[in-house]
Amino acid sequence: MTITGLLRNKSDLPPAAAPTSVRTVSVPAGCGTGEVYRDGCLLHAALAGDGNVEFAAVVDAIRREVHTCGGKFIRTEQLYAAWCDTPRGRADIVATGPKGRTGLIEVKVVKELPDHPRDRDAVQLGGYVQLQFHWTSQLRQGWAMLVYVDLAAGRMRVYGYDGRELRQLVRNAGLCCLAA
Image 1: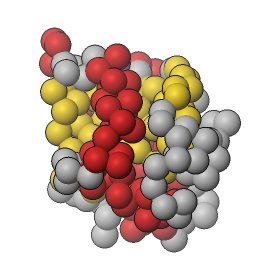
Image 2: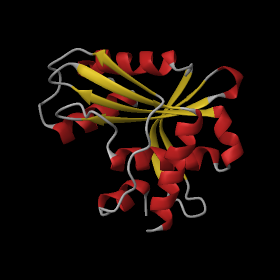
Image 3: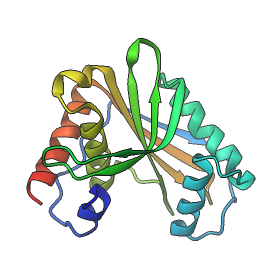
Image 4: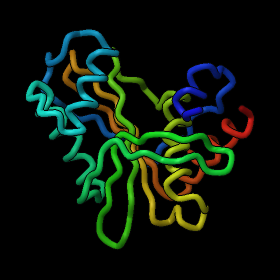
């Protein structure tokens, strides 16, 4: 079972943890097919470096946001084995920076930017953070971002998690996975 697979069938999710920061950023509008699922797959492939130039400017915008938060070295499609009660998963982006700080980034293509993080997405990101750090004491070295991209409108909303808010994100993911 994966984190994504577990969440696909759950309806009793804890509310999304409040983010530490929220930013809305412009990205080039109009790329993609107009189908959210297909565009999400294409954008994720472009993030992983498949050479798709149609999404290059959007990928650059995401990378700039990661860099702004301290991510200097980026790995995509990071696989995680299951740990304790958390199922295995695959983070979209893992970024490392100075002083050993590590960030996990989840990217979602949407029809319309949400006003706040969606519960399912926040629990998914919290699960990946839990798999990356394992122990609460290691969370001091972590941060996370939930990125929503509206390709038609040419906007991206970035929800950042750090410190207390990051710990709450992980707690909510643990509550969800333990109840599976």
